[in-house]
Length: 190
Image (cartoon, rainbow, N blue to C red; front, top):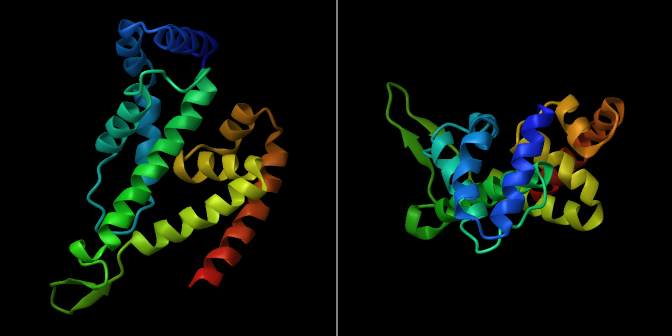
């Protein structure tokens, strides 16, 4: 996360907010590699059977952010928070769609191999996590941001500390608490 890159991204965001469509076009090449890394990290955690590709997730999230008349971010840091949130929303929408009766959400997927194996769809996991995060956002926005950056954006502890302006030790402490809280919460929902 270089300073020059931070400044140029922030300047392009400001120009895009002023209505400069050229700035919007220049923004994607600067942030694409990082967005792709975030999307790949998130998709690699999905259970087997996921049909969404990292590139598709990046493009959809980017279009959601810049497709609005006013770019809803103020800085590079805020842009990546918004991108992580957009990726989460896309994954939740996909999970809801797959869980619906039209897509056979009430059925189990059977893989045809020598031995028949049942594979649970990812939709219930994503939806349960989404519900837990909605409650967490109401209770403690900082903790919700840490989960977004770690789980959905795939950032390391040092990157999260840098983005949030916390010490790495504090982020580790928060993450230990959050893992226990999420585990407890998700077990309750089962």
